[in-house]
Length: 168
Image (spheres, rainbow, N blue to C red):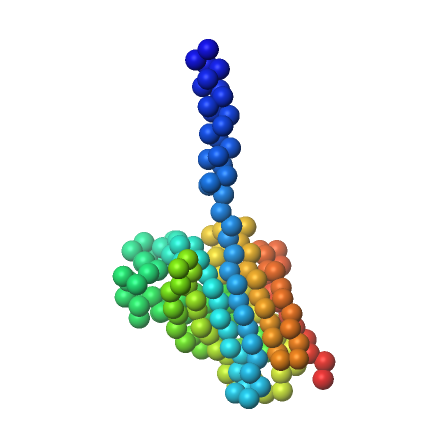
């Protein structure tokens, strides 16, 4: 009788534990081309705990992705990580990212980036492998907007590049 109760309890608890342990891994990026300033303005939202885990794995175990950590130092880590994992190509040429800073939201960090001096935009490509080295199931959503053309992409480890070609 005790064994049956144990099995019943186990049958109820195990699925609940598996359900609560499951987590979704994703980020969302909005990239808007501003023809007036000739720049691509990029806003990326990443869950702060995922970003902290990858920073602790790659750089330093003591990094905290919250307000208690030195924000200038944190911006340095974010900028460095984006330079390695977020590649923007404009008209076939890889471009430098101008990391502007970040702000904290309830569950995620909002990162602000700009790619400047874009004349005669014909194509834009974003290769986004943020968090994919630590979380194989990571998905990165990218929304590209050039004013007249809007397109969204779901990037995975197997398909990590969003390409938008404009016909002019």
